[in-house]
Length: 243
Image 1: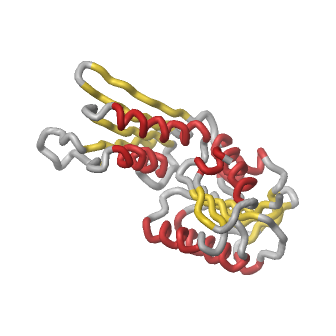
Image 2 (image 1 turned 45 degrees about the vertical axis):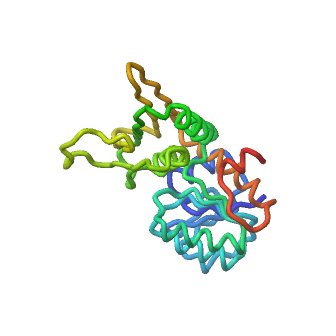
Image 3 (image 1 turned 60 degrees about the horizontal axis):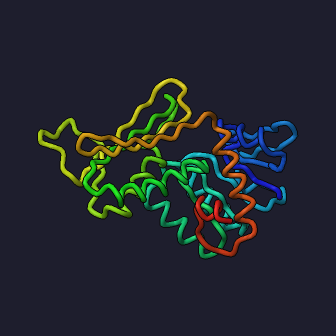
């Protein structure tokens, strides 16, 4: 398998390169070579043959990545976070032409946790739910895509759930349907997500902590292996885990 890596010079790009020797070329804001791997700053100039595009870049070039994938007609793994609903709509439309894996988190453990949250939300109907996410001080989007994914898990079982991001302007008791989403940006925290279920005289907290960025890179590489064998359509990390 030959991979074209978008965001090759970033932290996640470095994590992918540390785990795989299958990257044949990449894209970054500046053209250069990395250990013999050609890095382009224009998608139009890419000359290498490859089997799959892995995108670990940022939301500002999401449209360019989609246009590139559409032009070369290669499978795409989207690991970029902070994408808005308009871009997600374009991803869904493009999946009619190529196979795409799009997930807000490529950690195996986190994807299991999101399923566990559905079970707990269904079982603990009278419990208040809060989500807390923590990341390093260089992360630019908030809340994290993973926090949104966890909220989506809650909403699947509690349809009236409403995400609340700011309570500073609210002078009233908490509503039962509220799901507070709190954000921490500090130091070099790789990624930490907690979901709190608080009932009468008892609290249950489910937590996932990333020890390094390699867990996301490893999951994304598994997604690459998965998507090259699939027909056109949209898939997520749970599909990858199921095989």
